[in-house]
Image 1 (cartoon, rainbow, N blue to C red):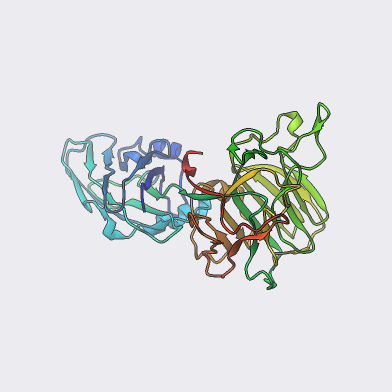
Image 2: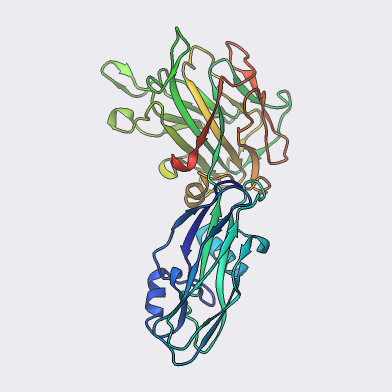
Length: 411
């Protein structure tokens, strides 16, 4: 795991729930033992180095005022703290293995002292792909003074920023689910699709790719289920115009006989050529609602008949052919879930990998294979790879046009 970001979350423990940071501040007005970091406003980032490197992340055990006698404080990792945080915040952190964390489990504040800096060191390690690890540190017990209930625990969240090679596609290297002649046989009452996408202009005469002039034509399809009822996702349609020409810099979703999009580009909602966007859309059969998200924020919804299921049997991408696919499109982190992910989950994980073995993932293509790859591999173990060059009506280039490394944590 390289360049792990270490984030500090304010995190107070109660018997059945957790208080806010403001509650923690109120709680330490009386003289009790508390962790200073748990009183501060949440979220502070520390970037760790390569695998095997050690990062210092000290914490401070503090008293509101000095005591006439010594106070002994025992510290430890606490999985229950992390489990409660995950449940409350819809996160999926796993406790860092103890062998990668080093800190004294007992500290002593001498009579007259109000604080003690606890040295904590975390060794960067290679964890399971897609897993976010965290260190939940808690005051386990005290001798000489009661611990604060509102600021006796906090979390260091170790997350690997999403940095990877990304392929680019044009009209001649569309992709299809493999094996192409096999019916996947999957129909979902609830689902979520996520992906990072970047559209850039492509010169017809020179083949040069530039940040300008993307979204140059309507009906540039980036994802379709290849079945009925239809799920068809594309850039552009002949619905918005200005100055005598149609504007195609918007994302449109056609589903269950209806359609909706990311917004009218003639009214300031257009997509910028050369910019990266994280797209996600979810569906819930109980309400018949499909919801579209851009960069973790909800944009729009479409409500169709309740109780319908969406088949995912013959997925294809970049499959419009040259007449309707004129630009250069980069894509990464394609995920298909069998559940309706929440807005919080989409926002929290869009710049991270997710756990490859999550049982709710039915298809996960990181799309990070690199130069020369002909297959985009499904890492879930479900075996649903995508073959490059099996789609598109004007060619069958079986490799990406380019592979470029991007750091999505900075986008």
